[in-house]
Length: 243
Image (cartoon, rainbow, N blue to C red; front, side, top):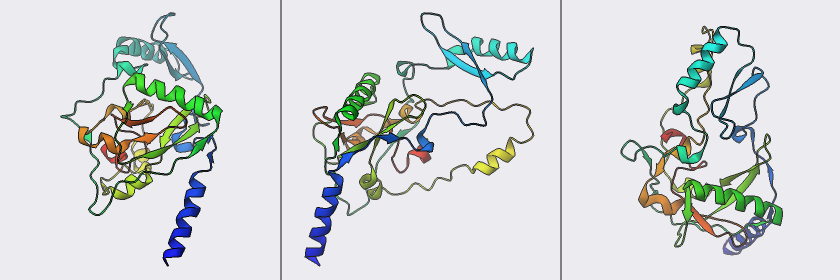
């Protein structure tokens, strides 16, 4: 039995050390527009030097279209186009905690290789997250996960996901009931107009509990280093419930 476990562990490590292949993000993470959406008209709520685009349906008729544009202009300070305009929610209101079930020890995943092209794209995204203050360098990490870079279909930019499977397995499940999609659709069925707002970086507006930040540590390819999230990232078991 011991020999079988040892061989299985070696086989698993060999698989983990294979080079990461950069692939498109799954539909759940993709920012591409669904085919059922109306044709859109861009409205610039900023200036020529500092454009702040938003979009409304091109099928809207007057005077409703002008009224909607005027409403957006009046309340444009309620929207954000840059990360520095989103300071995050107060910790007294909400923060994300990462309790660990009894008997689970920290896990450091085996390192995975990446191609040079992927490594450069990852470095650009890491610099953007650092500048926004969403991550910080990790020095003494007990938990350490790999990143899984995926391509956004619409822009070709890289989205950094983290393989938090070990951490999620060790975390108790928050059974907060999530909304049921069919009931939401039924509730909107008799309205004449629907308005969709994109909660851009919505998860990242919730802070990680200070004592749990170190558990979100992840390693990057090459000499980029290891980092940890100061805000709630995607991929954690209870992130949806907290959000």
